Length: 595
Ligand code: COI
Image (cartoon, rainbow, N blue to C red; front, side, top):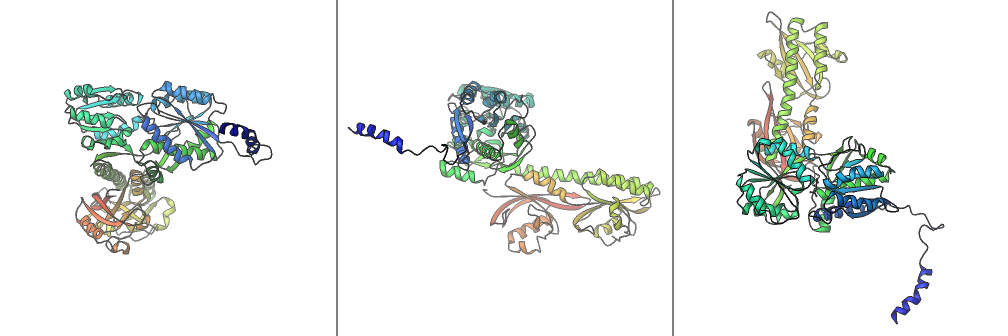
């Protein structure tokens, strides 16, 4: 009876349903832009696909003009192609597609171009680009990641590779074999749908490797356990896809694993939102998916529709998202730094060994800049030995010195009494005749007749700079004065900023007298650690500063404000020294414990 009632009511209901929003008199609702997202749902990478869908859905919640149709790309290129055809043949085909996995993106790249559909690749480290200006990729290429991994791998002598048998794993294995040919003792591909890897691992054990590179994703935890069970004691090393939650289920087997991973933004709200919604922290797969959707929706909001316009929107663009600061090159590939991570006490942690490497690399780069400046000034001093320190020839030599050194602010000669007698470029002519004899470094030079590098000085030019001076002797060996280069210390910023971009570390630099030479917070530059008010309430920092003043290298801990000056935090620090002509600067790298 009930059925009958419903059926009888049905015609009435139809009459009562309001007219659709697109009827002539109703306000016009603009149709949504359709985006096809092809993810490997039915595959060994199902959990990755689900994570990407969840993250994309979080991004979608911020836009109401975009509609996403998810398709199953299965576990190979053919699966992705079939999913693509289903999308392309729809009455209203997608304006853009997003695809995950190298094999899928590689297969879809020419196809999407042929059909005039814009293409974004996520989770795709290997792509053979054949169509210019069509596909944008959020994943760093394997060749680039390998450069970083190689730095760590080069300390081992017997390298074994165990890689998933797909275009990701096989291409990565090839890259490693090309780079480390003589050190590879075993290289085996495995089927990622399998669970028992013991026969292959037993073979690897027989080769006695000191490192086992796992080009793996979700099954890395099981592989690690079985590898230890068959007696492999080698260091485990991995790459970006290895950071999966399952790795932490049996940490006794995975603790110590070192892997390369994007240095993304650790504080983006996506991380919190995802964890709140799904109970786990997203990995780089979700993070790429979120940024891909956020940027694409933004590009569409700005009216871009054609593949050309969408590609142009990305190429050359820099944006800040969940991946941190990302820079797209003209080919459409994203760029952002990678770092080393490590499983420590059952947690994914930033590998602390890399901090010393980072500090040393930064120190070397500053040192190289110092040496190049010193060589240039010394060469000019030799030329002025016969040309003299004033007159046309001297001016020309100073101009050459200035032009050859990108860090020079101006170049000048000073006579034996400390008076400036020649200067380049021309516009600094007002410095001629100025007496510099009271400057500490000029006195030092006059006393020792040796090259000097000043501490930070308040310059007549109006900034706090550094002066490098080299003595000039005429052909008879008589001291005639010196030639120098004044430099603005912005090269510290140019060297340090890209080194720490996206890294949860800070680099700062002080003179031994406590003066701050470089800090991420520009207002700190020029302050004195020992005397300025902002440091006064932090005794552990003052104590550390005193230790740094006397010791050329070391490590410690101190309390001070975080990078944003929001709250007091405890920081670990390591420091080293960069020196020129006896003037020493302490270079410190600090990070917040458990950040
Ligand atoms: C890649 O192809 O770069 C990936 O990360 C795919 C992943 C499903 C293992």
